[in-house]
Length: 418
Ligand code: NAD
Image (cartoon, rainbow, N blue to C red; front, top):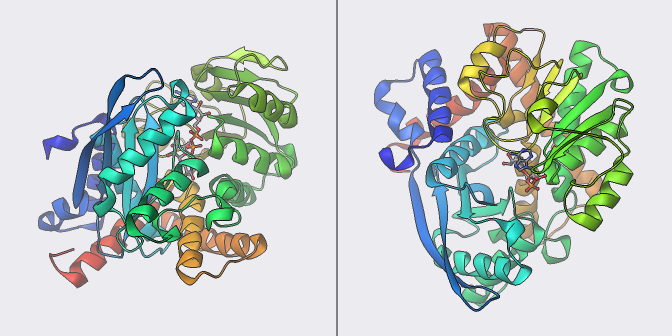
């Protein structure tokens, strides 16, 4: 399937092939498990603020339909491409199966730079994109959510556009909405808090005390910023953070309240004066207890994997580590890896709760949401560590094995159609 050719899709396929060999999956079943069930590419013409019309390209990929509707985020970024979206959809499938959610994986995106677009232009892109994919989504078909470059406002526009088309409000068509429109308590914080919870479990396994630990976070958007405050809440010192404009390092620990104040004013870390400037490359190599890549794919590669200096590598981003880097990390047992499909699963778990609440029009308080989230993450963490230990597997291979095995079983039970 050459249409998906992309370094990130190749990477997701290499991971799949390795696990399929390990699980002894029949070669005749593999293509059906690996390649997306369906994908839609659309043109998104938008009138810009200066009166010109710009045609953006949008994608939505649904990886498999064997366990229920599909679920996955919407990314707005200049590098969005069909193959990247397909890889992210595949990882969503394994993540949902690992955590026992009744979904297949999906992902979507529009190739654009949200930092250079006005609020009106972003609304135009979102509404037109939603209109173009309207028959492809639905609360029992495919349910989008936020990802890089999108947020609660994006989901509100998507939900509104879909609802206008349907003739009545359909809050369950997207998750990650504002609470006032049927969003869930705790959804905005869910991914980062889940990362914080799982880092805590890894610290327990390594007999590390949070208050004696330091952490470095690459990417300071929704996931990175909440992860940082979640770790700081338990006493861990955040010594470095970064965004697309570069990183900031302070060996004594960064004052996150000052960082938040700076971000509220400038929407970027650039110009922050309470720390030393470093590059994103240097940041990944800082000595620390917890390293959290929370930005984009393919950050830890064969070039830097041997030099990273952490005890816990918590993959808050999707696909931050290449298979070549994995081969190097496999030879470094001193690093405890929390693989992406486990580490950042908190987001889709609370998205699932939001969807359930919307379908029932019955809403839960934050304590109920968080209690249920941590129970699911605890089970997935235990299952992954138990399998890794019992079979001598890396944490990534163990987590992928559990996810892929469950989808494989569903496909075998249902037959060729879904
Ligand atoms: P976001 O748009 O809120 O933030 C992204 C951050 O990364 C920004 O600070 C941006 O400046 C920074 N960034 C972009 N390119 C960078 C680069 N080259 N180097 C360093 N920093 C860079 O996005 P998000 O929702 O926080 O998503 C971050 C990661 O988490 C992505 O991999 C996403 O797929 C994954 N994820 C997000 C969710 C969610 O609920 N939002 C759930 C699961 C996984």
